[in-house]
Length: 208
Image (cartoon, rainbow, N blue to C red; front, side, top):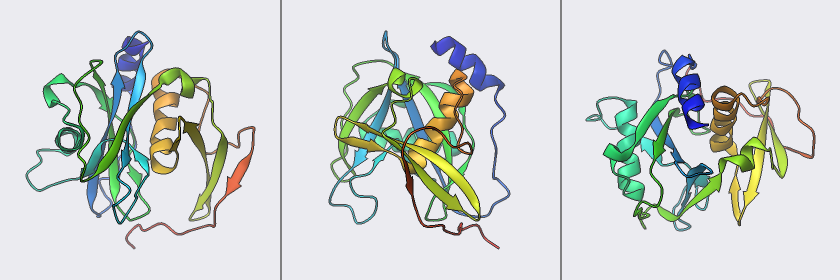
């Protein structure tokens, strides 16, 4: 399964938004190499002023001393969950996405060993947890969020797992991983079956 994922991501040409002048960030989608592989997530601490309690992948804003955005993802993962960068097997990048706050986020996919002594930075996180990839490949979404940006409708899956809610930007990245990495028939632009939850239409924060 993971070897096929490696080959598919190496052949992928992700959408790059390098021409868009805005702050940059990067995240790591860590796949834990178990007999039944899992995907690792974090939950932001409840005391934070922004995104408190939200589920995310390890990551953050690029610093001037980061060699590139992959280095950003590794540094942030080490700071947030004490993940040794040397233990990450890089598989490739996914398409850039724009956050609600006008930040260009580049997702990177990597494989990590199981049962590492990971520690959540209490200043930023209050949980680290794993979800079997099969949960997503079998499409156990609870509903679909309908998010329209600049007139373009996105159908973003929302998953409830052991009290955690995986949705929004993280779910959008997950959709590309499932589609491009595993060949799952899923995309953000085709209405799926099941209940929908509509959000007010909004404008992007792309510079004009």
